[in-house]
Image (cartoon, rainbow over all chains, first blue to last red; front, side):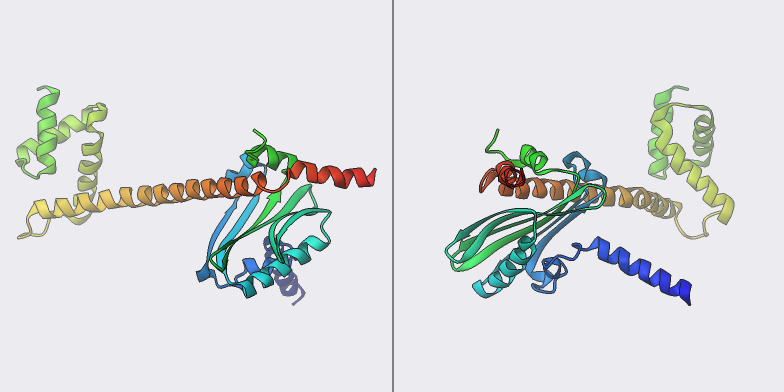
Length: 149
Length: 126
């Protein structure tokens, strides 16, 4: 019986480690806030991310009304609250940009939460990205900031 | 006899228009040649031989060409389906990586310089 409980606990821990490590946006990535049918999802992991110094990339893109946008904003801001560092931009009352450096995981794996929202004819196009890996902000900036080049 | 002759026999083999004598001649040639031009026919002919050894002669009344066509088509499907699936998977991976690059370029190229944002954080700690 003890062995069975140990196996179940290990499986549950594994599942938890695979999710967004206790973030509020986890609900979003698990399809509990917006249906999967309403969003474009891209999940990449493994060796193909090595050139980018990442091991996990998860992105969601969707279009929502103002009410739903507020729900998503709250989740992102709650995750950003305890973050060691963050950058946020607002347009009026709405969060339009967030780059959040989440507390790193053991083994030197950094975690980032990126959020962007653009208004188009009363609706909002939202992109939320979760990144994990050894890449530092400097690394990501070098690779993806085209303004610097 | 030269290679061109056996190439003609190979083509005729796929069209199932060889006489038994020509087929034996072709198989004798295949057994001793290492020419890569004959690799394809070797695979198919080998498969037929194995099939015949297992199941005997084709059922009487059924044209041999249909059976051969069916076997060749099955072989082609066995080879092609995994290759096509792999191709689709590779293309999807490439598309996902491109989409990732575009998305992250969008994030890191907009807003403030992300590198500078950490500077303030570290300055505070000093």
